[in-house]
Length: 442
Image (tube, rainbow, N blue to C red; front, side, top):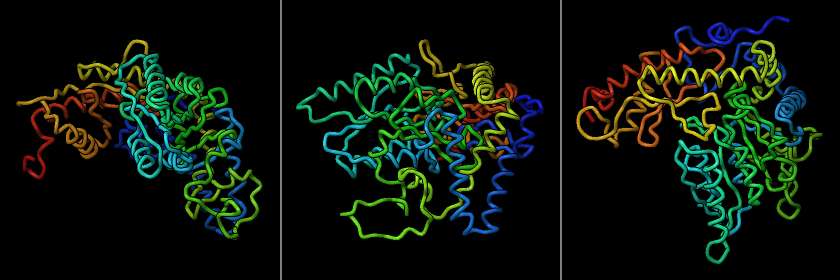
């Protein structure tokens, strides 16, 4: 058997990047290697050679193999894993599928992903559910994060006439922006203790950090596979244990394998052959015509990670080491620091958040608080147009931060290069270049 390819620049030959492109932002959309692309194109060619045969008869057994591979990876029964396009769709499937009653409260942390926070807002607009945000500003100790969840739930459940009760808590494995690992294991355990449902947004989960859902046993869990597992966009694993599958009536959208209550609808035909999967799984196998050949590429991605990269543990450990070393070096270049704190495991992931040397205030040099959004947009566009890279930055806690993504095709010096680019861009921001559009100051 061939030896795995060394991490860093040699690994980049297995990917499809332009020679000039510097991929410093894997966390947003991910990418996939050439062997997975070959598998994808082969499935697409097979589908086009005989579309009806492929969609009606060939697709389902191949999908099962992919689901089984993911279920084995995270240590749960295959019946508890279905695929959806992305984590946002998975969370919408759960939140829109629940029957919310008056007094139900959904709690979530202030660092919730924007689309998830807006989904919660939609639920509170269209159902009887309410929501409450848990304030917790990082850096903060992991124990304090868990305590704030407990205090919030206890306060809501014991206030007033007792008609309001927390039914679900939503939290991340690894937050998107800033990129920090949450103590999701302890938060899940606390949800069990408080008798509330746990909804884990693991968009940055499978392939990013160690995960054993069989041991963790959350109530609901979603994880993109196109971000960190090298699947073509977009593929997401939605985990719903059998004990909770009765809470979710339908896939999103509802399609042919939905089984209506006898009293709610006339009989409707199903053009597909009888699906041998349990009814819950069958609902998600086909939800309308779309190219889901990317769902079938899980075995190819896992084979690449095993044979070329040396396996899951090697990938995860190397990325965490690179994020730590690269973050520290980048902070030294920028003359700042990495977001971190005592008693926190926030850096135990493939992200590092490095503060940018920009001040916020009035006068020449500092950035006006009203212009912070302009700065992050200008940095992203200028980095793309002038340096052929993408610099993911965020204004958080009164400072600007660069979220760098570690991945097997990068080396520390690549992250140092990104920091040097930002040194020059920050100097241009201090001169006000970010507020000039078409030669006019806005």
